[in-house]
Length: 96
Ligand SMILES: [Zn+2]
Image 1: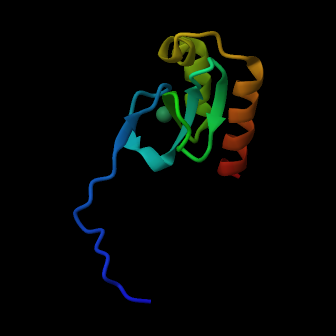
Image 2 (image 1 turned 90 degrees about the vertical axis):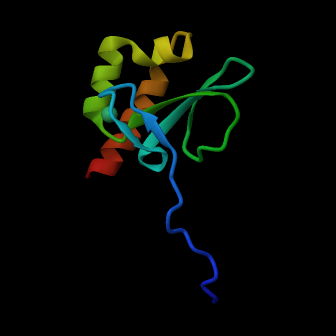
């Protein structure tokens, strides 16, 4: 295949983790969104519509976010427990 595309110099967008507060490449973070219907969901594709919050792929950040209620505050809504469980599962998978 040709290599006509150049990605050099292309800036990748960064987002702030709600756990540790670090700014990271969007692709390294897990996105949690509130859909226009008000539903909370983990968006692994990063393409869904809605208000998003970002967190590192790390259980440490998840713990901090839970403690500080960062996700609730960021999305301005209570977060169902299974969302945290889903995130934790994903993070543990990524860490092993
Ligand atoms: Zn973090």
